[in-house]
Length: 347
Image (cartoon, rainbow, N blue to C red; front, side, top):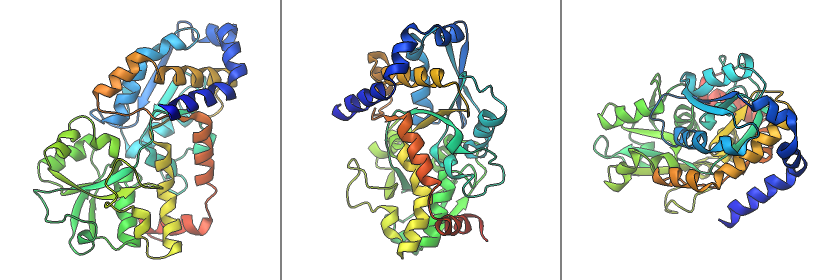
């Protein structure tokens, strides 16, 4: 709660002038009055935490935003969030009425030269993230004898993903190259939820690169409670205190410092938690008003209750901090980026 209070205070400090004017500034209020903000989730339905946060926001945030616009939530699956990001970047209005919520792996897609990714994350208008979290890799115990990441270095494990640019494909590919694991990656699932169903049916043996928060919410929570999965590895820039320290960090499995730096190209977006953004060039007064309203919503009792019911945490990241994380990712050494790209896509 102390961290949450500090972040809210920081947001208000950075946007103090904008927040004050938003309360009395007719331009923002006049623009949003009678408008609708479309909140786009970049995956299919039943996406766990990625979907739960925006759906809760949609129920409370309008009372904090000048003009009290309506808020609707829609799903736009495709290419691990790249389809939604392209739409927000190139087709959607850049006026503060279209808001994206996409699994964070999409952030690295243009850096890795994935052909479909035609957007520049550095230019997006970042609103904020509801919580920090690491990703994990798990195996379905009934489908494989593997119980540790070291065993996955000698025994193949079939894991599922939506596309080559999404975390559940990029992380196992990096671990294969730089840590020596033997994950067999099957892509093409319509959503992360479909991957989960395939695991339960025995079609897949595991999943590498989805958030710890997602594993602790919704249907996946039963996987842990029933002892159906084994957590093999933590995937992020640092370990989570919520996970036993005996579960290794993927970066620590790198064989050389150069390998570790290449893995950081993919690990970087993990620091964004559950990022949300709008297209480039959103008018500054509207962006500031959105950030302030977002911060207020995260401490609204109704919002807190809604996300707690889903087993989710609130540990926010301010929009300005998301901007910096993304800029830092895109400032990584070109050699490291190329090594990561080659590991994922080949030369």
